[in-house]
Image (tube, rainbow, N blue to C red; front, top):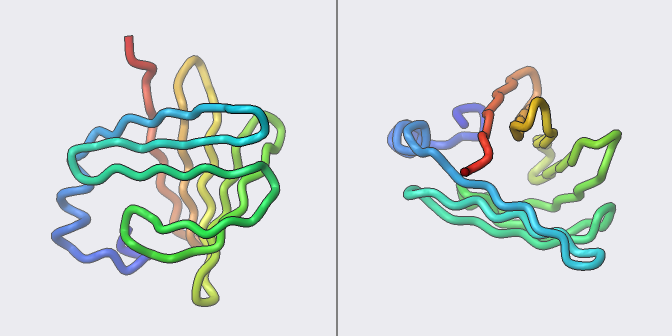
Length: 113
């Protein structure tokens, strides 16, 4: 988050959250919902089609999400910058790998029971 320019206080609060991610498919539309005590976000898109997105840290980006070998690859572009979010299932867990330049962060989600 620091690489994105997110302030110290916001990074501290966000670092303690345990978000829930819900991925839904309705025909050719995919919806990704992220819910936490910090902030809720929701995006709906068609694979391979560019769309406008407002991120949890209020960046206004152009995004494209593609399916690549079982991974959901989400690329965000704004002001000459780029981030990628890769979601994949491993051992029954959702692994989210976020990359901006040479900064990489990984978050692991376990399925709710």
